[in-house]
Length: 372
Ligand SMILES: Nc1ncnc2c1ncn2[C@@H]1O[C@H](COP(=O)(O)OP(=O)(O)OP(=O)(O)O)[C@@H](O)[C@H]1O
Ligand SMILES: [Mg+2]
Image (tube, rainbow, N blue to C red; front, side):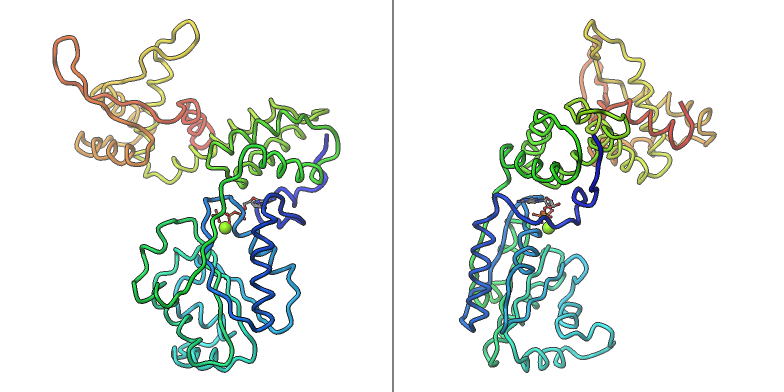
């Protein structure tokens, strides 16, 4: 088995066909053509969870619509995150500095063609009320019209808007449902056929699809697992792409997430994580090799932390007060959880439970610090 086309596995790749989104594509196309014929259309809000194909559908539909009397612009609210930046982009004046807002408004009003604007990840725009109000009101005194397609994965979008904005918005809503496991299999199969040469086991695709379906039907996550698993299979010179490659991919993705998170922490917090992971690696195991009791007392962790910080990391350990502050932060990040329980002598003891695999943590320190 060999990867012959890696591009089609990357998140940026826009597929030739968007299976299971045909209805959505057709509906949006019908609005585009109506607008191209100078008929009025409502503004559209597209909702859907992450990886449900919103960005792909919009880009695909715009790319594949043949319009004559219409300009179309796509922009992402993550980058164009203020009304000012958006208007300067829509009037092609991004390079000129210091222009007043009224200049953009006049320029938009004096356009010769209708304009369809798709704004992706619209939640990131800081002054969204201002933008929507302004753009929807522009139509009142103009010969050409502006229509918007707003894309978001937050159902909350409308509740964030001002009543005044909402009433001038005149919107129609579309909901993209999460992909089911079966739909994800079709998407993966479409992709693997052009990505590789050689055989693949369909059970491997089913496995990826099942995992991604349980993670809110996210096609991006499914494709990420597929790409990683195919790379692993290729590196092993496997004849056939199989389930075991998917298992390995999942482990490696899990490790990446842990490593990313650890890397972003201040060093003292990292040392606390190392201490906990190290203690986990010595916990007693049962017959099935699972840990019998995965709670460790905070005072034990603190004592070990002091030793480890000074011996392995050659850093002066922080005080108990700081240590407790670190635990708090780590708990907020979901890396650990703490519980309070009474022991045999009825004393109240605080315990820690690790939220990620201790082996991934130890692997991180081995890899980046050479500490085992
Ligand atoms: N119907 C589909 N057919 C083929 N590939 C798809 C389909 N839907 C999504 N994908 C792929 O899944 C990935 C994620 O899709 P997309 O970026 O469109 O999701 P999104 O809904 O915009 O997610 P987010 O809310 O995170 O921005 C892309 O790589 C895209 O190519
Ligand atoms: Mg998107």
